Amino acid sequence: MNQDPPRNVPNRDLLKVANLDSEYQEAVKKNDSVTMDQILADDFALITGTGKVFTKTNLLDEAKSGKYQYEHQEDSERTVRLWSDTAVVPAKPWAKGTEEGKPFEYKLWFSDTYVRKKDGSMLLARHRLVCKMHHRSSRPT
Image 1 (cartoon, rainbow, N blue to C red):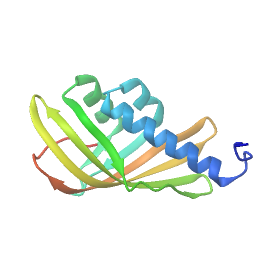
Image 2 (image 1 turned 90 degrees about the horizontal axis):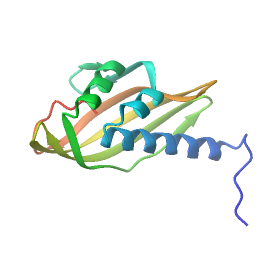
Image 3 (image 1 turned 180 degrees about the vertical axis):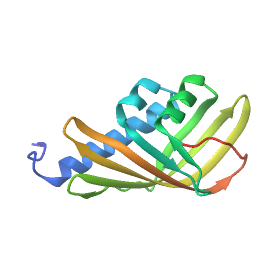
Image 4 (image 1 turned 60 degrees about the horizontal axis):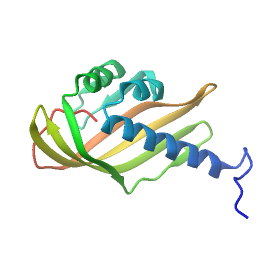
């Protein structure tokens, strides 16, 4: 018989963060700004490998615009690391789609930081490093 671990077992928290991260990635793929808004902390910051910073508002506006359409946005090599109320999720996603009708495809490493708040976990920060890009895109996520 397969049962969920008790509430205080870290595996349950690891699974919760992994599921939340998957939900966020799917929301980005679908340009679902409502779900993104629920997951992203108000003071969220995405910092690119060049040091450019994008805010929650930047990402929500971008999703609402529909400027990017995804054919693929899948993670590989994802790990959830948990320390008390903070989780770090490094992963290597592959994204493929169009930016204003022009094709793009890239792989990058990113590290997301989640913090558990009383009303649930929230994505606080994302750091990214592009590994390979077939078409340079200004897409921050």
